[in-house]
Amino acid sequence: QVQLVESGGGLVQPGGSLRLSCAASGSIFNIYVMGWYRQAPGKQRELVAVITSGGNTNYPDSVKGRFTISRDNAKNTVYLQMNSLKPEDTAVYYCNAVVTSVNSERGDYWGQGTQVTVSS
Image (cartoon, rainbow, N blue to C red):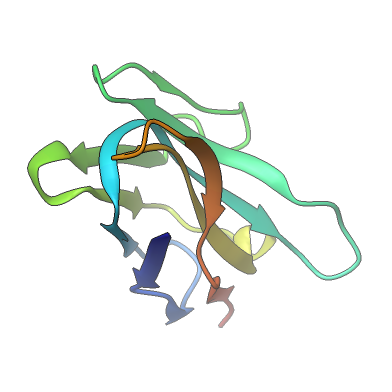
């Protein structure tokens, strides 16, 4: 089994910054992709950023240039640096990881979510 634990959410004023962290633990052999998604009230969950084990990243236009995803493979941890935050960034942010276990089983895992609120 694999667990993802997120931290770093909170309340920030427009234009401010936050850094989210997500640590994976458990029966992990390899984590190919780690990413962040978000879900605002009444909306579908959407991609925020993804990063492969090789460091390739992808962002939607809505956050490109403001958000930066990074990871520490040795710690099985992914980070999301969010700058120039806007009220429309308000959402619950979820960590995601595609994990190959020590038993060679591939699974798609999610964290519990962390609230990010951008408001004055």
